[in-house]
Image 1 (tube, rainbow, N blue to C red):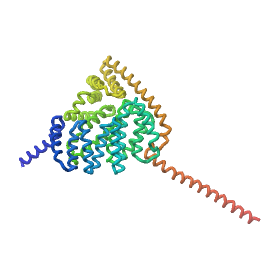
Image 2 (image 1 turned 30 degrees about the horizontal axis):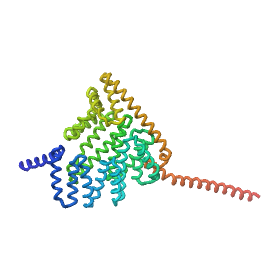
Image 3 (image 1 turned 60 degrees about the vertical axis):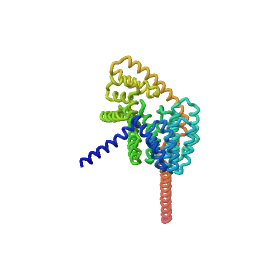
Image 4 (image 1 turned 60 degrees about the horizontal axis):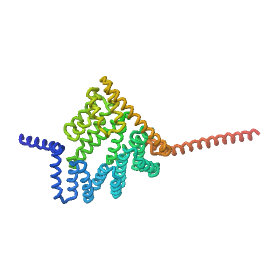
Length: 444
C-alpha cells in the first residue's frame, strides 16, 4: 500500500511538472522537437491534427501562424470542420491588417456547409479586421468605406442575428471606441443583448465583444461596474474552455496570459471593487506572475497591474513610480494616458509631491482636450447616422421588439372594441326610438 502511494505521488508530481516545464522557453523547445519527430511518422489525419495542436499551443506567434495553416489543411483531410473554423478565426487575429489574407479567409469560410457556423465565423473575421483597422482614425478611405457599408450593405429591418451583429459592430467602430454619445451607447447595449442570446458554441464572438466592451467601459468616464462584469464573463468562458480542452487532451493550451489581462483590467477599475475583491484579484495576478514567464516579463516591463493595486489600497508612495513606469509605454491611447495621469494627480496630491502633481495635471488636461476633439468627430458621425439608424428595429431590445409585434394585434383589438361599442350604442338608440314610436301609436 505504501509503495502504491509513492507511485501515485510521483505520477501527480509528473502531471503538475509537465505543464510547468512546458511553460518556459527551453521546456517548450524540447516538446516542440518531440512532436515534430512524432508528426513525421503519423499517417492518420486526425492524429496529425492533435499533434499539430500541441505544436500550435507550444509555439510563439510566428510559429502559430505556420501551424494554423497546417492544422487547417490537415483538418480538411480529416473532415474536421470545427478545427478548420477554429484556425480561420486564429488566422484572422494574426492577419487582421492584411486585406488579401482576410479575403482568402472569408472565401474559405464560404465553403463551409453549415450556414450558421459559416455566418458566425465570417462575422468574427470581419469584426477582427474592423477593430484592427479602426485603431487608425486618420484612415479616411477606410472610414468612407465603412460608412458606405453601414448605410448600404445591411438590412436595417432584417432579422438575421449575425448581420445585425456585424452592422452594430461596424457602427461601434465607426463612431470610435473613444465615443460616448447616445447612439454609441445604444449600439453597445443592443450588441450586448444579442451576444448574450447566442448559443454557447459562439464563444469566439462572445469573447470578442466582452473584450471590446470591457476596454470601452474601463475608460475614465466609462462604467467600471459593467467593465468588471464583462471581464468576469470572459473568465467564466476561459474556465469552460479549459475544461473542454482537458477533455480533448489539449494539454498545452494555456490561458494564463488571457486571465492576466482580465485580472489587470479588473484591477484598473478598483473604484468599483470591494477590499476583499481587490485582494482576491491581486492574489490571482501574483499566482500568474510566479508561474508564467510571459506574465512576469509583462508585469516587470509595464507595471500596470502593480500601479492599479497600489492605487486601490491607497499606497500612493509606491503607486507614483509604478504609474510613471507605465506611462513609458509608447502604445498607450489618449484615454489610457488620461486615466493614468488622473491617477498620478491623485497619488501626487496625497504625497504632497507638487512637481509630479503639476506635471500630471498638464498632461491630463492635454489628453482630455485630445479626447474632446475625438468626441466632436464622433458627434458629427452620430448626426450622419442618427436619422437612418435610430428609427429602425436595430436598436430595439427584445422586449421592445415583442411589444412592437404585439401593437398591431392590440390596435386591431382596440378598434374591434370601439366598433362593438358604437354598434351597441346604435342598437340601444334604435330600440328606444322603436318602443317610443310603438307607445305613441297605442295612445292614439
